Length: 415
Image: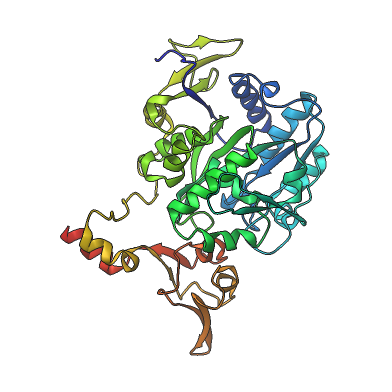
């Protein structure tokens, strides 16, 4: 076991078997938060705190698309019991429907009502300058975000077609107002520039604490069309980059393949290198063996991210692991655009609803709904497509996948 080092970022990993025993989740979360100094290390009692879950789209908890209501309940109850009463919650999802509707479908609305935590104002926007942008960019934020004194991010452990994973850093994008999120994809049209914008957004909003729901995560065609997979963990950290790096470790994914990790480290948002991260496991669940230490209360173990992966990770986690083409291969760079992964429709699952067309940042250019043999299908114009995968993200039928084109497969085989 390593000793706790003050100069390392700390990510608390809390083993949790299921969502069924809420008291166990609450107790485990309380022990985990104490390892970071308790809620008083992050929030003042009179501050207005925004709980920011992942409410990507209308979905039931079993689909593992949204933050589970049991996790939202546990954090809300923990804060209320500690005397933090000025709480609101909310998110601006990917589709042009009210966030409160998504909260109702996900089960969070019922929990918020029972706890007395209202849904914030996500129906009005406020435009603010992006002080770190070199191009004079702005953020169009939901009003509830600007009204909050502090943000507590309740993210979900999932895969993501563009950024490989969606976790702590990506969850903050839900603070952007409604359709401006799609517009952001057209303004920041690839994984690197989009990641840089996400990092700047986190640096601007400065969420104080991040809690990741990984009790049941999503693998495969995430962030909404993948498959639920039990990971049985919650993660807590003030460093979103370190948290995402530990998420990558649990998925056996090289953290350097996650664009927000690299951009976040470059900009000072956090650290992703495993030798700069301590993973703390509270005593009581799969813990407490020899080597446990005690700091201001609860017993804990200190693991490296690699050790945490060995104990709690999933070696065959279905996540995109291939490196992207590098410009060092000059002849490959010439066909980079046509060799990139692209959204592909499985016609057998498509119902022709047109949601993909409405979600596309390049309205009327990259995707058109066309009728063939009496049925409507989306048709891609890949010369216009920026590969943002907004269409794949919102498809209600899981009919759109991010796939490597044949040319890419052939190039990789030859190279």
